[in-house]
Figure: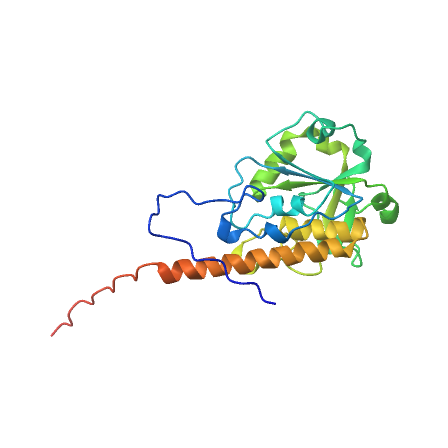
Length: 243
């Protein structure tokens, strides 16, 4: 059944605070987390979010973490080590970070959507072995510049594997977001691909994409309601025609 449209945003008092969901931190008209049930995942996930990430409406990092039983969400600029960030001891060699470097998906093996890279941004020779050794994935969340800041502020990221995506389909964001690269996806979409390929669980990706679609549906509905409630713009009077 199609999802019911969210209630229109009240505009009587623009200064009044907008109520937000304590679970996903989105305004109630955009909240889609009620239908989210955590799924079992073998590959752990940790999302590191830049503290100035402001995309509350369309951001998907918190929604992603809510989907997985083995997932952590951290907000900050830097942590002393992977162990400190996670709050438990782990082997950095068994973890990977979704890489933000200059690697070009056109240079990746065409049959792979997740590729392990070396320090120069080149695909590693034995992809199956490298991927099988990964126990956890780190995703940096924020704008492109904020994600790069997180990369440079945490030197321990150089000790983990680097993985990049070569997605077959563009993001569902469409024209809502202007991304610097074709392969840039939402956090929901990126983790969906990672869990399908690394964890062998396509059902996780299916659940994540459904949540993303619900969020976009609500977002468009809210914007449509806001536009309908906005006062009409005064028509500009044309200057009188010259004789």
